[in-house]
Image 1: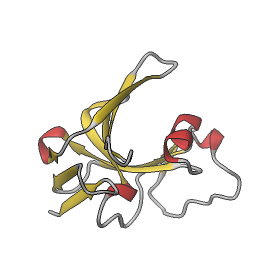
Image 2: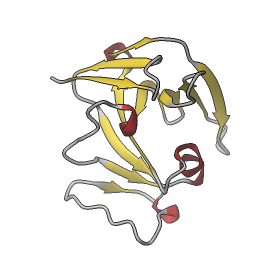
Image 3: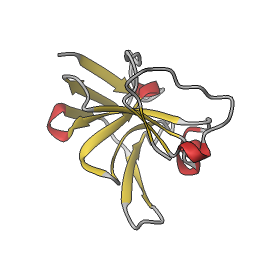
Image 4: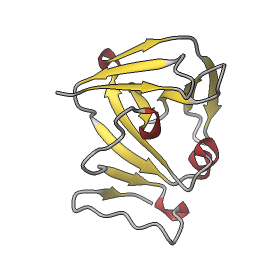
Amino acid sequence: MTDRLASCRCGQLRAMVGGDPVRVSVCHCLACQKRTGSALSAQARWEKLCVQVEGQSKIWVRTADSGQQTTYHFCPECGSTVHYSGGNFPELIAIPLGALDDPYFECIDHSVWERRKHEWIELLGENIQHRD
């Protein structure tokens, strides 16, 4: 069991997670690329009971084409997204790997929206589930 701390850039909004995540994934969809300002998003998900949040956040709710909603919590001071929930996994809380003080995991479990993956990205690992 590992405890991890996630925080925004200014440190005002924090999330402490206990135990191991139930899923570590990357997403290549255009919405995640816009959210991160990068070629993909990388996140770990924990059961809600394993996450404690401290500090103030603003929220933004995104409704996908499927009608599913995801609620993003970000720092009102520095704008960093620290956690989000909803979408395909309403019972879990996702934390962007970059928000974690220790963002290193042995390997991801899932890579999704690969039809949007940039050609120069190569994901290595034997047990990664790839989805278009």
